[in-house]
Length: 386
Image 1 (cartoon, helix red, strand yellow):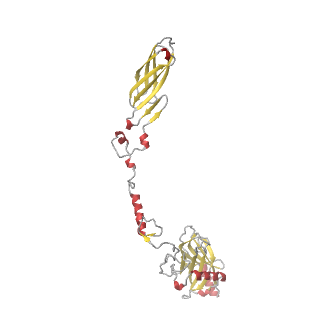
Image 2 (tube, rainbow, N blue to C red; image 1 turned 60 degrees about the vertical axis):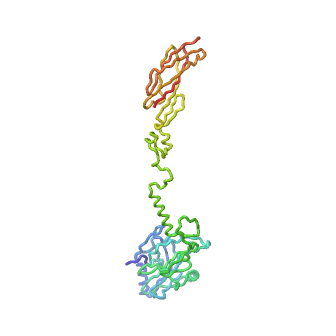
């Protein structure tokens, strides 16, 4: 059964190792490259022997150490460190290259994020890479590396990592080889089965006290899984409740149109829109006010009609500003003579007939002294209906 993570020799790698064995030469491994599988969030890769390069390279560097495992002479161990000032990407694949730039070994890497943390901020976040390559004869691989790099890397490892006797964190990658990885493991490398502490993984500043409470405002305690679950259960219950805010008015508490008209239901609210629905007003010389149905639907209308009286009687018809929807209850009118108010002229106004759209007025004049007989007159009326 193929394990989840593994590395293998490419066809080029196998050919070069075979040639080295037959011709008595050596294969010089010099570089390691890592990639993200062509996805910024890191994508799983499936390395094959026919590969000639990574899916997408994100970093390339020289090997800092290359040696034969002291306990297995067929294991060649290659080490490298991605430095602090490189990062901002995921690592899901890696490859070992020789001095001619050919891909010799390719591997599938546990998805690991390499953060980019600028130097000088007091925090180190290098990524230590350790690859074990299993070959038939390790002697066919040249174990020489750049001495300046190897020495510097060795000093870094001696200062920041304990020896293998202190344990190796084993990322099992299968029968073809093994990967040893660690991010935030800048102070030690762990043995298989070791349970890292919060200090081991860079979380040493977190408090030690745990709490199940969900109403504690202190910043020196860690919430337990129980506390997080309690909060999550409350959120789910709130989201699944039909009426989660019983202390507030709900849409179901709004009065219906029928309840609004009857006016007997208490404990329900009326929306501003519904409160004004059916109410309108036109405050002009010929205008109206209409009240909503829940106030009886009463309509008041008024207007002015100007005319010239040539004879003793006069008939005039005018339309209401708006049509009464159902019925007119009454129309009341009064008038005056504009020209001869001082002459004591009287205008008698009568309503001959009316309907929901118009009204017909009957006017008669009582002459006063010095009346011209062609007075400018007007009337004003008010009507009520619904």
